[in-house]
Image (cartoon, rainbow, N blue to C red; front, side, top):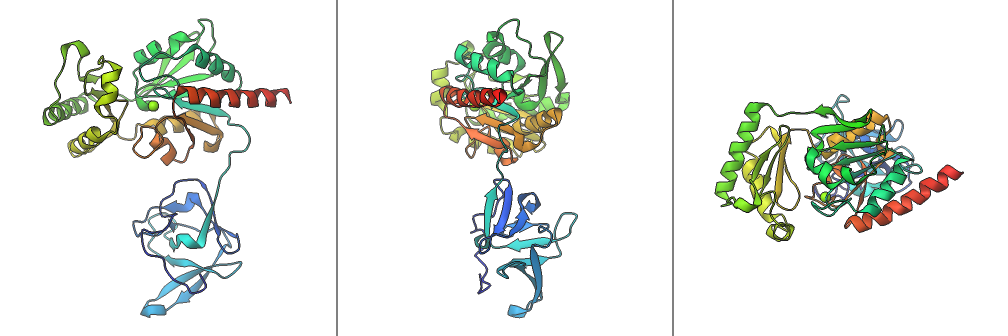
Length: 365
Ligand SMILES: [Mg+2]
């Protein structure tokens, strides 16, 4: 850092923002940038639109015949990078920094989460199967401590079939459990003893038609045909259109074998994207592709949930089985929510029992 070198572009570990926290000077631990100030400049270096006040010093730099402004740590004088006046945000600044000069201190959740959120298939229940009684029991106990949201590509009806109808009949979910079917295109909430629709982000009829015809083109291109016993391949539900490559009712075993590494659906998605530039296209469960209005996805649901509860992002813990790159929960993580990856519902249950114990201990104190 003392030699003021610049690391090769697209090589640094902090090029993309993945976790919230504070970037500190690697030499002296001085806090330099908040991750809130980071943006993707496309230049190949981590970029920020402002430094923490007083954290850096600007020094005119005419090396290599260029008129630039060098940035050094205000505390120890270590070289960090340069600042330019071509930033895209309100500050107009672009701090172009070497990853090797920084150390990210991740933001920790203080204490226990104030709300929990879950994916459904593969997280709370096996894909398309009913939730187990053990899971219902632990969720009911946790609902006594914190509110819970569940978000899935599943329809309202499927949520009922797979999830809601296994809870005790007299359970009062008011201000406790929130269901976001169709990846957050809808919210249903418990009010005065029954489940009611809070919002629906319906597709307009023209858009819905466009999606259905694009999906029909995809079926042709990928040679997918309806099997009468397995139900229709395209299902339009008003605010989401879902393609189930083998049919909604195809046996789970067949579904799981069809595209385990998502290779086929990655190609289908790439085929659909130019046809539907204004929609949100996602790879869903074992065989599905879900399409909603742009901006409607699991992270949208989570943002709506924390706003409704009036809690900061970091007070929510999201648990899902597909947070890995390309997974259908990844968008939640990408939007800076605190997430926990699980392998299957049994794994979720172990984590929930542990969390429940902590809530119970905290409430006894
Ligand atoms: Mg899942």
